[in-house]
Length: 399
Image (tube, rainbow, N blue to C red):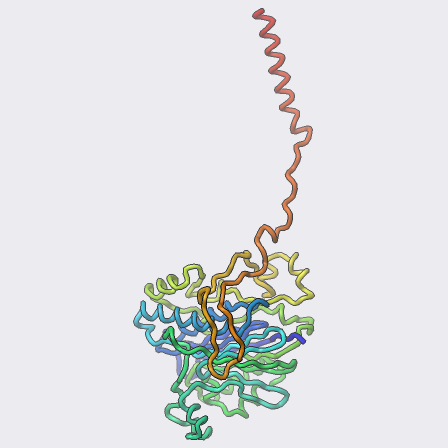
């Protein structure tokens, strides 16, 4: 049974911060949340670049999220490295990141850092991801209890992140089976560091997902969160559910990637050099993002004849020109998984095409060239007769 997501996303600065370093994206087949770090402005740059890279992952049947997520992570690292080399203010920037991709039946969950994924199934809340932190390592090795970890002075010390080190580790991958009725929560540590599991469960269990997202933000603020707090609440639904078909929902973005970022001239030049064929506007980072949103089988025929502006407005499938897309990780990247990830072999990555065909093919057969009618031939005939009469007259006069 094919499933996809319906979603709500919310973000807040928190009680102390004056800038938002979090970014999040929600779409019918892809959910991403990034919590940037690295000082004022640098964190929001890192989370925005990461979100944009992950928004472009290939969701076609020819690819898989278990290949695409590591590829997007490596591309993000290379870009952050190039930008921080060009602009010292961005040095050591990075971001945590969680991403969930749905291939129609199964979920692939990628994570690095301490942003989290929770699953609410019926009345039970499960923490799906495990933090890549020093404190979590102490818990895993029996040196610290979960209760004491909440007040540990190094509870925010990360062991892994998506940073500006091009040879850093890949994100961990988890394969999961989704069931209709499940509710997923992606959150930054501005939420999970300040609320107990039972408080998260109570808020996320609200019947309406928009209410649940707002309840989570409100609870974190009431608890005095000093960090930015961002959540994505997504319900797993069958694709046959209507009338508001989930695959017709437009992607939504919140946080720094929605608000825009400020880049120095050196950082902007480095970004353009890293991605010469990749459109990126700092004030509107997601403006030209190609977020694949596969059409439902029953709607493909109708979408093929719908006006292009209507398809883009509904978010069903953004019109593209059919040219090959640029894979930022290059054509020959390998994709080995970290320990504990999915155990599939990954072949070499390659650029992929949009699958919509050329512009000429989309237009259909060319109409036949118009044939001239008799009226259009008449002036030519009259002109020819006049010339013949003139020649005869001259012959008679001169002869």
